Image 1 (cartoon, rainbow, N blue to C red):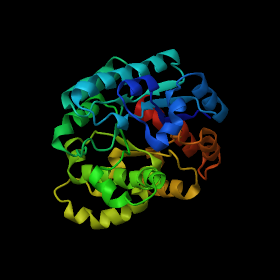
Image 2: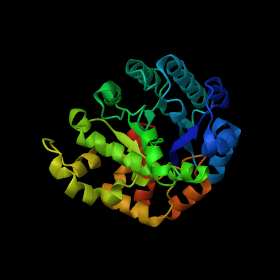
Image 3: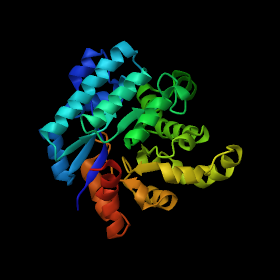
Image 4: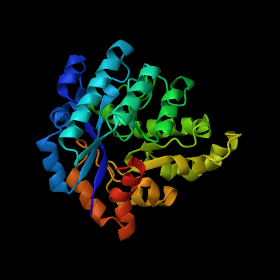
Length: 317
């Protein structure tokens, strides 16, 4: 069975150092693995039975930078991603990293990455300096993705500082760092971000825009019926309901989730055609993820869709 993993991170240490950025408590422990887009990564893929990784820069560390620093830095990240793909064209593809503090330059960079470098979409890490993707100022970026017919992978990122202070202060630093990110906060933040986009009419204006979220849907499958019954009555004037919009425009990946209950919930809420395999390398265990994929309670045809078929269709791999 062919396996394509599509939330697989990298971050070159030299580019990070040039920007004066510290990876912090959690990602800092994975610096060497994030930096490796060569033999070490390929060995992990081979041992786990992963044929292709779609690489993405873990760029929330630099997404908030001012344009004069952000634009060349993101171009450098994308050039490095392109080099990795060129060196191993049958093993890697890439999502573009975008300089979100300069909308026009972000559109240019997305266009360059897709048209010239062959990237399969872009990854955006949450809000940028408090600006979410429903804001009119970033609509040209989303319109460019729709025009280019590539998806935006919306990855979680730390909440605005005021939220972090309110929710996560008073805890031990390592506990706060985890609880505010992968331990809970990221998933609530990202699910809410998607709902902002729906409620604000982004998908009404751009019905062909495709958005991917990881971590088995960032809680949205579990809450979908409640969202539909509570939020839908107050979001008026749309051609589709909240749930209908999500089922049309949103795609989910399995990144970091390797048990039956979340998978079955996602399948029930969104259907197999909108679910794709991911590991969340290097934060997820590739061997564990593929082992679960092969034993998950789905039939052979659905397993093939999740493993590679849906990614091949959406990303044109």
